[in-house]
Length: 411
Image: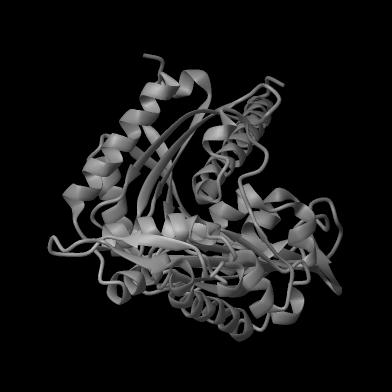
């Protein structure tokens, strides 16, 4: 079997609360992503983005990986891994350095980011991402790319995303038990944004909400940079739980009823539509109105949207997201969700599917695949910056050997 490296493949693994998705993407010669394999399994042993049964999670991952390997005809050895959960937190920091050669070089940029990220974080947390927002040189602000500019001192603003070390270790442990190595951990909402956002939206100001089963992951972009990230530990499972309790039906049937018949806005549903609801304990199934189902679902979605709105308000960014909201994830796919969200947020809302993929894209043409496809986009960028770094280091080593030779009088 061909190894991953030989075919220039990147692999994303999204371990969600309700499903585990694997996507294998091939990097084409023109630096595009072509989907060559997908694996999908119901997640067992996960709760709100955290592992609560290692063995069950390992089995689910292994099955999803096997499925993707079979489809892509490759052997997967390393993956980009999505992480979520209420333990994720963020902070914005500043760093400042003097400019050495009166002109900014890459080393100055690295130094200023290093200064900004050198904030004390507690031993039980780890840094996931340090993302530059903008730079300022002397009195000029809002610089996107400072290399080559002249000045005396440079300041950088960065967005830092951290997670609980133990939570991350548990996820990585599950992956390693499947004989895989995790190249990098990526916050799920950041990954989703790679798959569903356009540059214009990031510039204008946008809030991405990945509505999963256990968590809602939020990332807010303004001025082309990430400003705020958060995880709300309630999501689609709350809706399923409400249906199960009110209609007295098992959770698995409640989930099916939600997916097939539920609507987030009751006025979109006809009073005449009826559905059959299985009972518990061998009792006969009952017939109920679909309108009644929507009356149960609507208040819960209203609550979810209010939690999102509150998070955006607390971040102080409500007036800056002119492009509105982008919803993605399985819980956002229900009928009426976009209309209801527009009603609550009083802003434009769209349901997003992954963009900019080729190959077997019909397999991932769904809002619930945004994170796993985003992980591939993240991997593609890391791959390309890795190639640039290699060529830079080759140039540096050549220069160093020439200097070394010159000192020895051989130049």
